Amino acid sequence: MSNESVSLRDKVEEVLHTIYDPEIPVNIFDLGLVYEVSIGDRGEVKITMTLTAPACPAAGEIIHDVQQKVEALDGVLDCHVNLTFDPPWTKEMMTEEAKLELGFL
Image 1 (tube, helix red, strand yellow):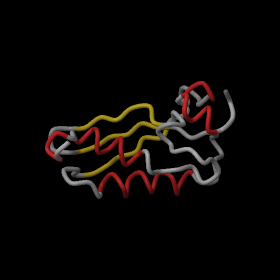
Image 2: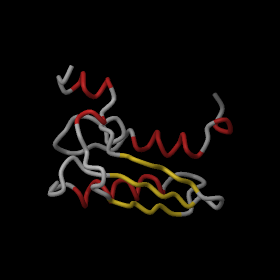
Image 3: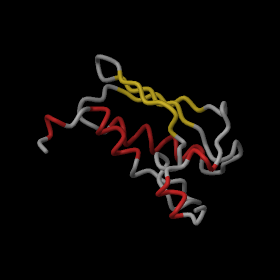
Image 4: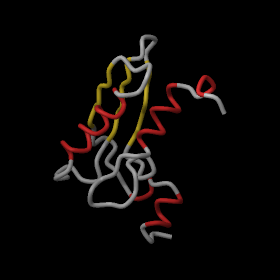
């Protein structure tokens, strides 16, 4: 697959798969922490996400990683991360692979 056939959304989702909650050995995308990714016409990316717990000690680090890694992508003008706890995260939001990895299946 050539680079031209990979959309900016695919690149953003790919990079989100490389970001981990330091306390959990599964990436934030498979954990179900990313609720929405929207991309504007000029490459402005908005990501709505949550954390496994409102008092997550790694919150700042995770959000910083998301912004830094997404903004480093070709075609991205900037990245804004909107942190929400509505709806609250639950284990049911994880992919089957993540549940398997963490022993929930």
